[in-house]
Amino acid sequence: MAAKQQGELAQAYQEELARLAYEAQGYNDQSRALQQQLGALQAAIADIRGALETLNNMENASQGVLVPLGAGAMMKAKLINEGKVMIDIGAGFIAEKEIKEGLEILNERLKRTEDAADRTQKAVAQISEHLSEIDSRAKTIIDKGRAGQEGE
Image (tube, rainbow, N blue to C red; front, side, top):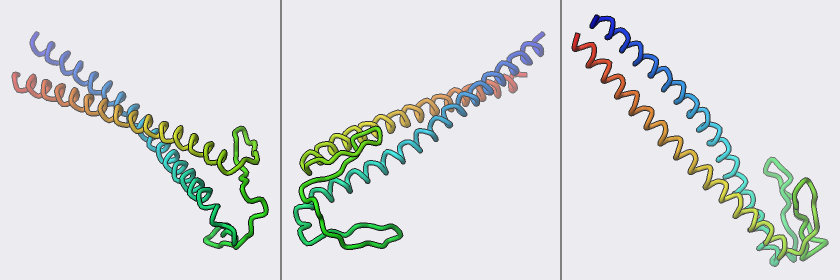
């Protein structure tokens, strides 16, 4: 009778460990997806900051600006519409705005993107906590299983 109970207990431990492994895999998948999202948000933040810096320096651009062409190549260009900027206002629409208004739009976009990055980072931290809890529970089950085997 005791051997049967030990076998049932061992089976229960194995099933619980399998369930925890499945749960941990789901959290790991979520964490990877959030890490990718965080990388994209950080790239967007860097891009917005670059645009803000460029717009802030437009006052000193009376002699022209360097326009990146790609692959490290640049071309010197003269501004034909000083004081104005073309900015994406959403849904693929571009509008001409005063530089001051463009700066306001970009600063608001930066704030929203930084907030999203913060929320994503917090979600990654929560997942890490859940994974630690799962690890702790799994170790407890393994220890109980070992103790049960030693009692035989």
